[in-house]
Image 1 (tube, helix red, strand yellow):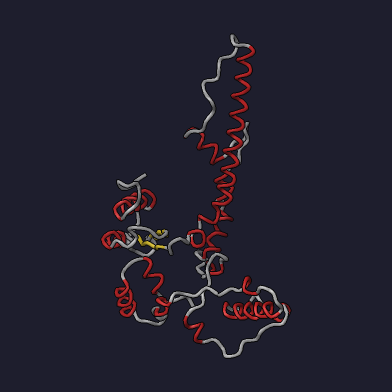
Image 2 (image 1 turned 90 degrees about the vertical axis):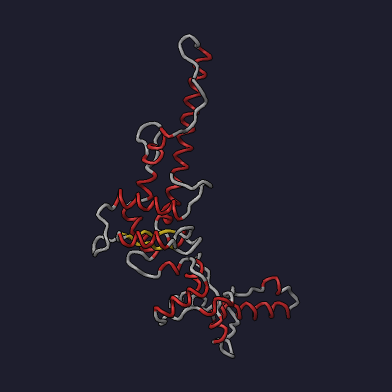
Length: 281
């Protein structure tokens, strides 16, 4: 594992890792149709190192940095790690239980017949020699699940790509329940003067309601509870608001020169790219 002196990752470390990947996995990569390589990364240091990006681009390698702290939504591999981790933990527990039972059985035999059975060398533990069966499974005793093969099947990988919007290329990641919805300045400015307030749940379509409509329904319900002498404030909620500084995003029809100037004004980093860029319409 390549790390810096602090045990972390920086532009130098990232550059070395990517070069090793390209040389090993894509030795024929070049900046021509059919030979280009795209690495999809999470947010982190070194992703915007200009000399590294230029060097990789000359070799036909493109970096696609994701939004920070969103790998569970945007990274395809993360979609299958839940099953992989659960089966891996199950395998570890099964193997340790088997090794412990074997150890105690050998210890009992030694205590009963010390001349015939040697004392077990040490308490059982796991090491690198167990990695293969823990990941790939074991058909004999102890029976272990093929955790890696089960979690990363062709069907599951295709499903993960579809959920993240990678193959086919869609915006399906935005439908993930973890993606936070916010009320923008534009939403506030476009709020109608009169908002329908439902008197019961059957009159309101919760599946298509905007955040502001839900906020108004909550406000009306809490006000009614307060008039009845109940503590309506305990249930009052406000829809999350986008920070005001995000109200001046680049418009979706802005020219390339306008985008470059806007990004230069706020600073060239991953955070500014994602917060300053035009929202997906």
